[in-house]
Length: 172
Picture 1 (tube, rainbow, N blue to C red):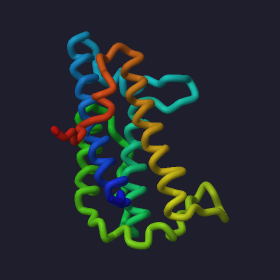
Picture 2: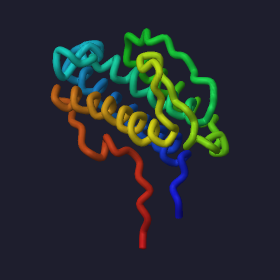
Picture 3: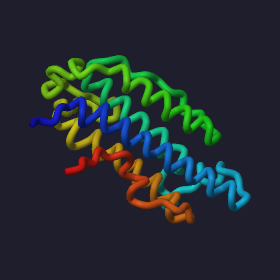
Picture 4: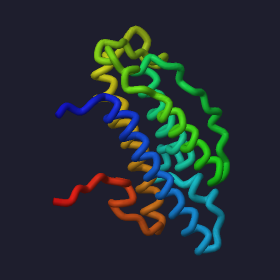
């Protein structure tokens, strides 16, 4: 059985974004139990030259919706990047998942040969396949891993299963 680009993008991004919500909820509960405001986590970063957690979430959601929009030849929803609270981060993830749910598998027909361009790389492009495999998927997981690592390094009790999210285990 072949894996479809819809499974690699919309389905997997929705699974991972749902897992991200669980990770952030655990961080929120941890901050509450330790009597500090969750906004402290939002401004935390792994290294001085990396973005803080809030920006990591914004980029992860942008990558998910942008990947699907570009490969599906769809309008990419614009989000304002103004999240300042836990609730607003969760709402952003929910909006991203809601968009992904609207995308039909047939939107991806011909994605392999689409030309994907970015303003910061003038005169250059990636094919749809290269964009998917070399940019979008690794970029999404880079930012999700950074979010997880920021929280884990700051004491939030997270495990690999929190990162992986729901899996479809079968019984024999």
